[in-house]
Length: 269
Figure 1 (cartoon, rainbow, N blue to C red):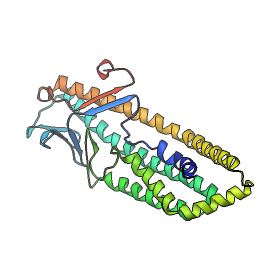
Figure 2 (figure 1 turned 120 degrees about the horizontal axis):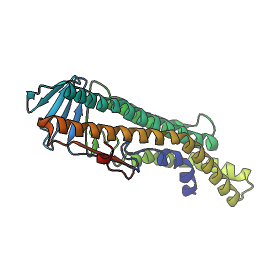
Figure 3 (figure 1 turned 120 degrees about the vertical axis):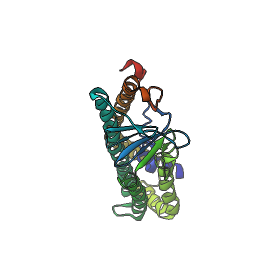
Figure 4 (figure 1 turned 90 degrees about the horizontal axis):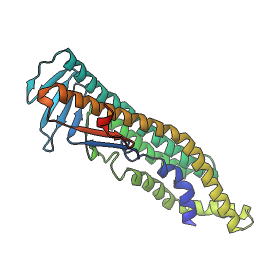
């Protein structure tokens, strides 16, 4: 019985959440050092959190504490590199927030079907998902800044390896805490099916498939946005290669490596 409920009620909340927005199945993005983004600067840090170099106000390049004099070509690359990195941040945030909202819509559809509109189970799950939603909002605030390395975004385990499990845990906890209410509702549904368990299971499975189809249709946009985000990461990697080729002080510093599909990024420059 629990498996039937869990399958129907978790489908949208778990299968459509992206644990790491950079982790598209055809996208490979690796960071060899950390990147700290604030409203004034972008710093590139080594494993010991020492600054390799930084870009201030999207135009001033500082390497080893020294401001580097740039010609017009170099200045253009530095500015485009910095602004491209900054433009990724709001898109990452928007995808994450939209994914949370999609999960909330999915589980509410399921519980509303079984328990009726305005049920407490759906409200409890929505409240927990809203907490995660607010944590993402706070984490991406301009005041706090961002630090990201190959382990993902630092702080609150947001987008870490357990992000999907965290969403699933929220739903499972709500189901367990409300099992009595759910069983009563299931009993009523079974009575309306004449006590036919197979008929009830078929109805639940059909409803689960209906939710899955609707959520997957809506989630197709996430895949397109993920592909676009990966393409942006490849372009940033290419800009970094241009920095290495044009600015001697950065020749041996490689922070970002990105590829999309089966192509290697060096072939896409």
